[in-house]
Image 1: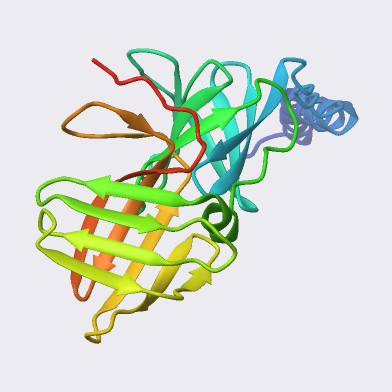
Image 2: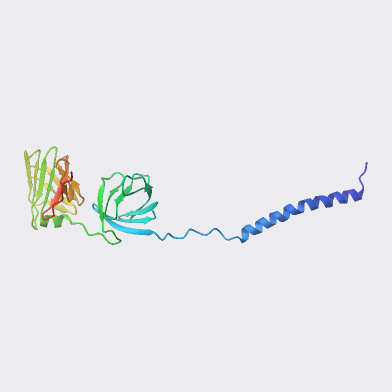
Length: 244
C-alpha cells in the first residue's frame, strides 16, 4: 500500500519536534560550562609559622602549616613533610626516611636518611641560629673527648698552635701529634710511628653511655683503620647534668 504524502509530512514534523528539546538542552549545558568561573583556589593559611634551629652542624628552617604539614629546609634543600604519630611533641616525615621531631620550639631531633641523628636547638622564634664553634675556636679554648668499650681519651691543648694527644685501649697506647691539621670540625695528623689520626666533633648534646653525663659535643676518633665514638666538651663549657 502506498503512503500518502500527507502522512509522510506529518511523520517528519513529529520526528523533528521530538529531537528539538535534546538539542536545546545540549546547547544550554555547553553555554553554562563556558560562562562559569573556575572554583576559587584555597586561600593561604593564616597559621603558618617559621622557626630556626641548629641541628648539629647544619642550620634548619622549619615552616609549619597548621598541624598537618611542614616544610623543613636543611642547607638549602627543602623536605616537604606531613604529620606523623608521636608519643610526645610534633613529628613530621616525608616517607623517605627523613624526619623532623620537635618538643616545643627550642629542642628536637633531625633524622636524615643515611646520616646520624642530630640534636636540634632553637630560639623559639624565627631568626638566624648562632654560629657553631670551629676547630680553630675549640683549639684556642681546648677540647677533650672520651669514650668507652674500649676506653679512650683525646685532648687538644689550648693555644694558637694545637697539640693533639690520644690514648686508646684504656691507656695502653699513646699517640702524640705536635701540629695537627685543622679542619672546620676537627683535627688530623700522623703520629711518630706513621699512624694516621683524626679527631672530629659535632656540637650536639651527647650522653655518656656508662655514666649518663651529658656533654656539649659528640666525638669520633679514628686511629688507623679503627674508629672510636664518644662525647666531648670545650674548655670552659658549663657542665651539663647527668641524666638518670
